[in-house]
Length: 350
Image (cartoon, rainbow, N blue to C red; front, side):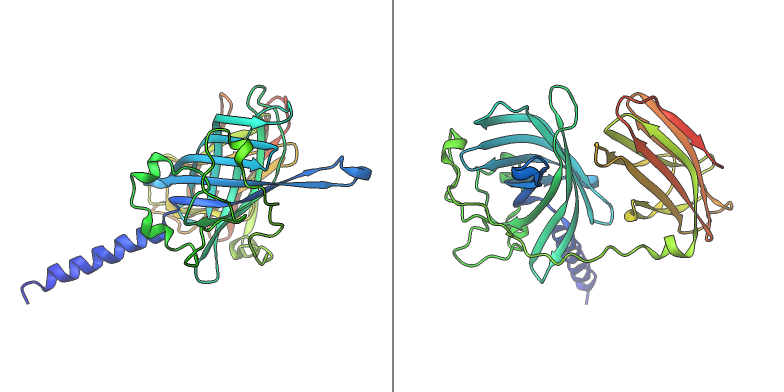
C-alpha cells in the first residue's frame, strides 16, 4: 500500500503526457492550396492548384515555427521559414511565412509569402486536417499578391529532407496518428523519395490530385451567445495595415473577469481570465478580406460588476485603445476595417 500514491501519480502523469502529445501539431502536414485567376480562358475563373507541405514545431504557449514547401511540377518550387500560433482551444492555427529560403521557377513573377488562417479538425478516427484560407504579400513591396484556400492533413513522412528541429524532438508517436497503410508514405501525390539539389527538376511528375482529402463541409453554426445576447458595437476602426495585432487586458483593477473571444463568429479564446498581462492574436487583411469583427463575451461578472477590459489594436506604429464592457445580456463588439493607404480613423459609439 505504501507505493499506491506513487502509482497513482505515475498514472496521472502518463495520462497528462499522452494528452499533451495528442494535442500537439508538431510534425509534417501535406496537402494543397488553390489560387483562383479571374482572367482565365474565355474570361472564366481558372483555379490553379499547388502542392503545399509544412514541417512544424509547436512550442510552449502555442507558438509555432517551421518551414513550408510550395511546388508545382516543373513550374514552381519555394521554401520559406514561418512563425505562427495555435489558439488555446486548439482549433485555430495561424501560419505566417517570413523569409524565403529557396525559390525556383520558370517565369519572372514576384516572390510572395503566405499568411494562412486554418482550423483544426478530425475526420473519422485517425485523419487530422488543417483547412482554411490564405492571403499573401509581395516580399519586396509588401503589396497584396494572391489568395485562396488551403487543405492539409497530418502525414507520417515528408517529401523533403526532415528539418533538424523535427529530428531533435520525439515526434514518432505523434506521427503514428496519421492514418497509414504498411507501405504508405502518407503522400497525397504518391511522391518518390526526397528530391535533392535542383528541386524544380526533380519534383514528382504526377498530376496533382483534384480532391486529395475528403472533407464534408458543415455549415458554420452561430455561437449561441451571439444569438441570446445583444451585440453592442463599441467602436469601428478604419486602418491601412494588412496585419494588425490585438491585445486584451483587464482594465484598471484586476478583479477576476473571465471572457471568451470570437473573431468573425469563430471562438478563438474560451474562458480566459483577464489580467495585467495581455493575451493576443493577429488578424490579416487583403483586398478580398477587408473586415474582421471581434466580440468579447462575459463568462462571469468578476468581483466588480460588470465584466470590463481593455482591447488594444496595434496597426503599424499606432496603438488604438478600446475599453470593453459586457455582461450576461450584452456582448462587446469591435469592427476593424481595412483600406489600403487610408488614414486611421476611429468611431466610438459607447
